[in-house]
Length: 421
Image (cartoon, rainbow, N blue to C red; front, side, top):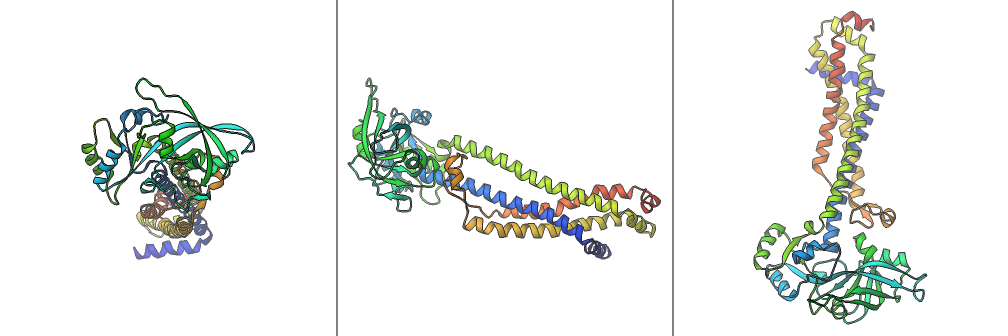
């Protein structure tokens, strides 16, 4: 076996150009495999975190009918006793905050904007005292301009992308057109509210930056005739608490007619979209590996065909077919080892800035909805499983590729090999 290893090594060093080209092709494919996997999985994990931090919390307590109508954000089927619900949540060690979400129309004029117009928005009434217990919206890091609204005032904070689209600035005044809450036989009516922009924010969620207008909850309660009811109670679990465990405990304590819905249930459509995108991206990664595989296959076929005479001489001198096969397979394994080491090292080196610094996709995410809840930087992750898989693939692929052409060449007679027939 030592003789065969030495023979394989001499062949690798003797055909340096071929060895380098084949190894580079393999290394490039493995490097792309590691980088793309890191970026895609990192984007998905980051997107999920941003969804929780900006939109859903770890989950929400809603009525079943409100959950079914979640896309349309009506003010029907509200949580009538939010303080009681919050007390139950806090008794389990979690944090909670009440919110009102309702679809509305923003109407603006040329008095404060470059041109008059109207745009649909999501009006979110927030409890300024407890919202930061669940969400990461109202902090100095997210504030681009101005300040946050004050309790008891017709002041709003809007997303930076929405502000850019309509030309809003701090001090701009516009009108909200929204339907008030329906109660019993009262279907509600359309209410208009004049509000002033006092702050502009930029957060991790594109949906918030593009569509949401934040309004003090007490003013939403007054203007929309909610009578201290809300559309949801958002929940943030204690560190380390599992959603399934919390769900089981809270369901036993909630009054009839209310249920706890996890962020995965609330964001089911978003998760289905991102999983579909991940599936499509996996196909791209697979194609990259196939391209590298084709390059290696082509090189190995050419190598064995070019060395027919050498193979015939080895057989004529008494070297067994099994040893010849082993020698070529060891040579292929050597190419695979070199390509794997180089590919994994390059992939890891390039992944360092992706993990620590990220890639700024802000200009693209600003104008195109990619489905991910990411507004600026995408970060990679360290996926040890993928790194080991890449190294293993790099070793195995050249060996598998080398088996068939070697077997085919051995089936020829010795004279045909020597004379190239």
